[in-house]
Amino acid sequence: MRNWIASYYIKKLKQKFDKTFWESLFISYIDKKTFPKQKLKLFIEQEFSTDFEDPLSFYKLLKKFFSLIFYTRLFPYSYEDLLVPLFKKIMQKKYTEDYQPIFALQNLICYLITLHFEKITPKYLADGMTFFSANDAILSLQLPDIRYNLELAMYWKIFAILQNDEKLTEGADHILSWHLNWLDHEDRPIYTLWSSPEKESNLLFSFLTKKEIKLDLPEKLPFFLIAISLLYDEVFANFSKQSSFMDRQLAPLDKATLLYQKGDGKCVFTLRGINTGLGYIQKDAFSILSFGPHGYPIENKYDFGIFRTDSLHRQQFENVIKTKESLSGWAPLCLHDFDASSFDKPSKTWMYMQALVVAEDIWKLSIRFMGLQLQDEVGFCFFIRALSSFFNQIKIYPRDSKKISTHADTIFFYTLSKKIIFKSKASKKMIIDTKKQYWDEDFFLTYIIRGDEPTLNVEIQVSN
Image (cartoon, rainbow, N blue to C red; front, top):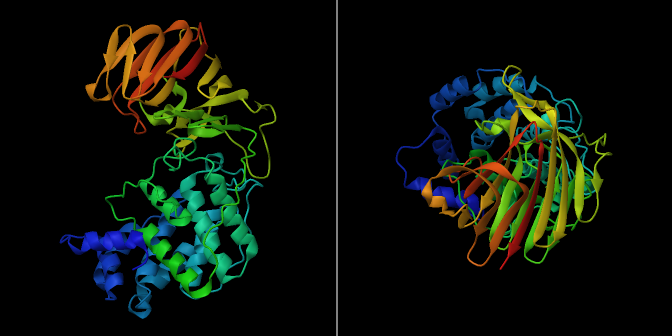
């Protein structure tokens, strides 16, 4: 089998005795055998008994249904009495084409079962940035999340071939080209900017771009990714001789985000985000995976980051000032509302950031909070990859499992060949923790900011 993702899991699962539902269904498809109907019936009763109202939950359900259709397609009449009623029930929930991945996947399901599918009109900005939701109905879906964008690009590529639609080909290439701007020094997507770490997204990125990147393959079978990638291969093999992807080398135009690259370093500053940070800094083997405000005391990731975005139709970053080396502007902190369908919303506390690239190895951050009471406290966090840290005559390593609270104006980090200095204008209370928080960082550094002194000024410098 040419599809290397499927081949890997076939070899792995052939040796496994006790298989899950999806593993058994996948192997039945590969072996061209019918799947026990009673097992399928029980699975449908368990997984599809609830109606999902929010778009992301419905999209997750739709991906499961697509996978069922794909893996049983060799014996369509064997399962018709189970899948046809389920299809009618699912398709009663119609999202408009503004919910781009849902609309495209619903059409792809229609294609699989030979029903009429609607024409897709791709929606994206000139540089290739696009969102799950093209309108402003649900703000939390207006981020360039690589998980959904790569899936959307794949749907568009498939339909571009089936419908001979050059606009869809161009749209898919634009999306993938945009995401090529946001790669780390190992050519892997930087998920800490607007997404969550997803092993499946790494697989999909490598599959679409043909980039050979270091992959940590998911232990759990990525059943949907395998199904959609097999369909993608099938459509290309049968209907197209063109290259699967063309890098259009598009520079990002987002007014809310600054990308600075020089030598072996990369820096991203952004005021676009929901429950995400303000940027990413990397130089040689040192990196700040993310940084940004955090509710204090630190309890969970829901209290991290900012809440500011816009729709594809309406630009709302006019008051952000951006040059080739700097980005400055305001953003409210992110607040998670557990009483309102667990949606994020903007906090009443705001922050102003002025971020400056002084040189390719020196960066300055000036942060000011507004809306804090005198005794209020808020954290400002850095998620750091380095080999060791030194401050106040204390040296610690990631393996030490330590959490230290101290006051300091300078803290050092080290890689094999570099020394990194964090220097603040005034001595601040800080906490440094070697317990991993949200990403695979080595050190979790938090400055504690009080309402009676609501500023933080930090210079970060890398030297030999």
